[in-house]
Image (cartoon, rainbow, N blue to C red):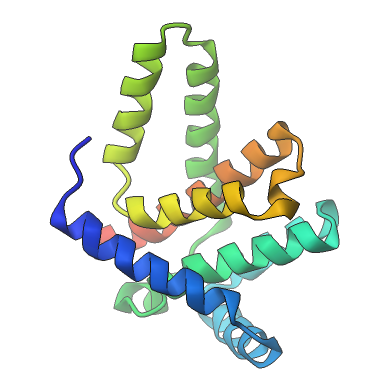
Length: 171
């Protein structure tokens, strides 16, 4: 996959957002949560769903990642006008689960690489998803999770990113 100039700009943006998210405090969380609950209530319900299944440190890291995704998209006009729906998320989430199952069945390593390349090429927010993957490979609370749990969370986060992308692209 060729990295474009836009990808490079986006990776700088994501890098800055990652630094900002690490410094967030309770006031930021409260203020942004209020805004998010008004503009994208599904995101809050998604996070609250994680609350039931994750340990405190895992939940804290997931909250940071959700705020990373939020910060990336929140300034885009359509995100303030169109809400992610549960049915939209489920449709995208099921597609991602199907693709993961296909990937798991594939034996040929070059076919697997081609598949991953294709998935990333069709993701507009590649730098953002790379930032999410970076968090999963750097944060001890996430590294300590079982692979299956990590995979479930990553599929959910990729689906959330794609929901936002779908809203932006449908202008």
